[in-house]
Amino acid sequence: MDLKGKNCLITGGSRGIGKSIALQFAALGANIAITYSRSAEAAQEVVKEAETIGVKAKAFQADATDFNAADDVIQTVVKEWGSLDVLVNNAGITRDNLILRMTEEQWDDVINTNLKSIFNYSKAAAKPMMRNRGGSVINISSVVGISGNAGQCNYAASKAGIIGFTKSYAREFASRNIRANVVAPGYILTEMTGTLNESVLEQINSETPMGRAGNPEEIAATVAFLASDLSSYITGTVVRVDGGMAM
Ligand code: NDP
Image (tube, rainbow, N blue to C red):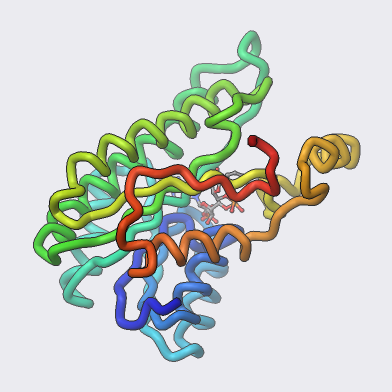
């Protein structure tokens, strides 16, 4: 597998799964641009690590919910590097609560960060990818968007929305050689899941046929395949990377 010379943008690339995707892409020869909202230092570490590998790297402080910022980031990448070949919409948050207690703010924050962001970046990427005669968009959903989860109505709605969005986008741009796919992780060890207590973790492991949590690198490997030319006939699909959790 090889991403040599591809210019790739990963939202939320400062930590967790996004960081793994960025570094995996860099290891495969891609230039990587990442966005973050608050973790400036962590983002600069990712840039440094990628540059050590020998590729171009850049970090943008850009709130994923900001429509104009998404356009600015993509315009800058295209202006400086000549094209955008791969977009990974990874930035995401949780604000869990049972629906009876869920606030309007918890609903809006999750929908805006997880779903509106996908619209912002995928729309801004479409024209440069059309000019480039192709591209690959990979959107990070979740098995929760497929199966639902009590306490996560906002998150599940945003992640299910990503699946519908991606299939529609894939249909709109298939004839332009722009592919769009979803990766739906199961339970992955990152800061997002770091706050879960032991009994919840044990329950998750017991509900996962492979009996363990996944690592960010295991998501990154699948995303890299969908970004690469090896997946040139795959569009509009949802790939679960979940140890069998949602089968
Ligand atoms: P982390 O919390 O570890 O990292 C989240 C990343 O998103 C950070 O880089 C963060 O940047 C960025 N981010 C958050 N909000 C914004 C925003 N408003 N604007 C720009 N960037 C933002 O999460 P994970 O790595 O665990 O999750 C990554 C994706 O994978 C998410 O979409 C999540 O829903 C999905 N996922 C995760 C699973 C898991 O088990 N971990 C399971 C299924 C799906 P900053 O550091 O600046 O805050």
